Amino acid sequence: MADMSPKKHEMPVQDPNVRRANFSEVALGYTEEDAVAEAKRCLNCKHRPCVGGCPVSIRIPDFIAAVAEGDFEKAYSIITADSSLPAVCGRVCPQETQCEKYCVRGIKTEPVGIGRIERFVADWHMKHSDKAPVKPASNGHKVAVIGSGPSGLTCAGDLAKKGYDVTVFEALHVAGGVLMYGIPEFRLPKAIVQKEIDTLKALGVTINTNVVIGRSESIDELFAEGYEAVFVGTGAGLPTFMKIPGENLKGVYSANEFLTRVNLMKAYKEDADTPVQRAKRVAVVGGGNVAMDAARCAKRLGAEEVYIVYRRSRDEMPARAEEVEHAEEEGIIFRMLTNPIEVLGDEHKNVIGLKCLKMELGEPDEKGRRRPVPIEGSEFNIDLDCVIMAIGTSPNPLIRKTTKGLDTQKWGGIIADDRGKTSREGVYAGGDAVTGAATVILAMGAGKTAASAIDEYIQNK
Image (cartoon, rainbow, N blue to C red; front, side, top):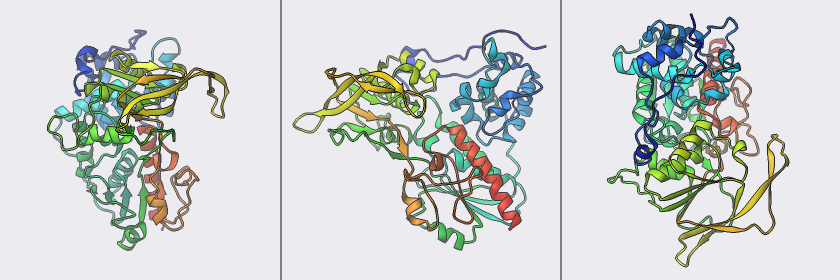
């Protein structure tokens, strides 16, 4: 019989006054008792609306039923039949706008904590199981995957399970893409990501790092080497700036650079080879999850005041509600309806402030969000010594500039159909390289869909 408790079982977290001074994981995870109790809130609906809300179509009621019975390894097997990165998804997926959004329990009460249970299952497996996945027999076909972010890893994992000889080419010195360089340790521990990657390697996936496709070698050369299809999952790592005066001053970072220095290069450690400015007063411009990550990292690096500067109101912020709440708990200051117009500097070209305009919301724009309109005569300054721009990213142009016959959007995204097929024969693409910056789980869904299409393409060939 289902547990009809109206609220989710609470996820234990570090105290805000403690965690804002360390990079350890904020959310501590369910105990076995918590996970079983939360699983028993599931009604096991006949029509399974939660599955329709999952971009990788995990059989959610089935794995939750296994957890309710205490069979955690069975639950893991059910999840990993459809998802290559369960420990990652359980931590960073926006379940509130996907699977949990469609949970029947959420109509009158809180939905089942699907993400929390998924995280528990993946963590339990990592802790208790030493059984390596069985490497499938080779089917004799080779596929190249460019980029080892969530879309690339998912595509590689799904193809490896079908017996393909898959090689992943990664430009950086470690695999993981945005999971390694973009998302902070306190949200997604890198040891967790590495374990997920090790599982894929055990399935037979080869990962070559320090290889920049488009420079080290081209897609044409990959085909010449015997790869029968190529998946492009290079993400959207090219930062966007506001093009306002002062953005070239010392102390202005893109969020990508700042987070890469902190997360990938461990700049928060005293003995780190890659430095990062330990500023006292920081402004992060933007309202998405990347902005929250940058602000919370700056606070942990010792900043006394950290501002989120966003030109719309809180209701329009694209960041997850949980990330906004955690940032507020940690002392991040929110300056809503505020738009920067100039970064101010001193005679040594160091940042000393941010000139801003107050805004008000006008008519809705083409996306349905109310357009921010400046209020005349409302200029004011915020005293600072560091500014981090977190207003978006776009795909790196290298692949499109070095690959003949590959159609792209004006803004740089690769044009692909709903199965990842591009204009170039045998080339598929997915994730942020196609859509622009989006979520980890949507990128995984694209990688999964493309893997199926690649399999069909090669088998039919």
